[in-house]
Amino acid sequence: MLRLSGLSLVAGLLLAAGIAYADVKIGVIASSTGPTAAVGIPQKNTVALLPTEIGGQKIEYIVLDDASDPTNAVTGVKKLLSEHKVDALIGPTTTPAALAILDFVAESKTPLLTTVGSSSVVLPMDEKKKWVFKTTQNDDLIAEAVLAQMTASGIKTLGFIGFSDPYGENWYKVFGGMAEKAGIKIVVSERFNRTDQSVTGQVLKVIAAKPDAVFIAATGGPAVLPQAGLLEKGYKGKVYQTHGVATNDFIRLGGKTVEGTLMAGGPMLVADDLPASNPIKAVALGYIKAYEGKYGAGTMSTFGANTYDAGRVLQKTIPDALKKAKAGTPEFRVALRDALEAAHEVVGAQGIFNMTAQNHNGMDQRSRLMMTVKNGKWVPLKD
Image (tube, rainbow, N blue to C red; front, side, top):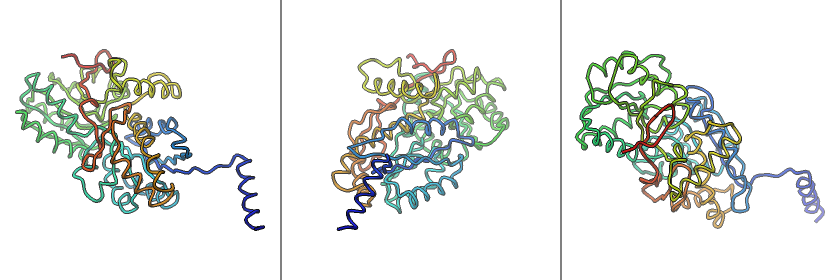
């Protein structure tokens, strides 16, 4: 009795002193340094805007930087799982890092809400990937819109320049197959590394093939390099990018060299131009206001919005999981995974999510639109 009374007294003193412990722990891996920092920094920054209480339970976020290195991502995830014993994970920033941590996510049976672009982290569905959910549009959803615009523009031949890693390779696999069905032939395919300082050789090979347009499968600042090279060497055709450049930083870094870029991306980037009836508009504008209020005007990024949407999905699903199990337990992680898989019509800043057992992305045509860079600004592409 005395011992229990003593423990209660200690607990009471801790609460009185303002010392509290989060009921739900969320680990976040972001590339806030290194070559992918332009993508990772807004993801890290967005964590400060995520809910600190869900379903009556306090939420603690533990944020680690992988320095744009998949090996560091693995080390960080191991730490989050073993030392912090997180209930869920958000991130990482790059596809190679996401693929590198899959084994550890599955082995620990911890839900991962990944913010990378490539669909290879959730498809094809298997025992590992059933623990992974994705808050960025899948490649095929983006490719569908891009190819429709290319077809409407009369493009018949295409040059492809992509990262020499899983992001670029998966894009070539998905886009190449869809392009062929659309009657568009890829006449040249080149690769480059995220850390390369020059892609002149690849650019010259692409120009020599005389394609009607060029498609670049890269992300962040490195995606500017081949586009700038094409302009410098006199290429006059259209240049398309993936949603891996859906950020104002891409324009800031590329300047006039990226004017006219064509891309299918999330609607948040052009939120002001969305009709009032679009349910995404209010959420997107709310996120932009909160982010820029904290970090400055013009700083918002769709990459940060992917992290924000992970928080939106968790806000919807954690209460359901708490009805079945206590946070911090294996049973809670399983219940959360099941709740995520059943998430329906969750409106985010980047799209609307309807997850199923076979679709852990759940985004549809409402989550993308064609846009272009005009006068140094992303604007919806007019038909």
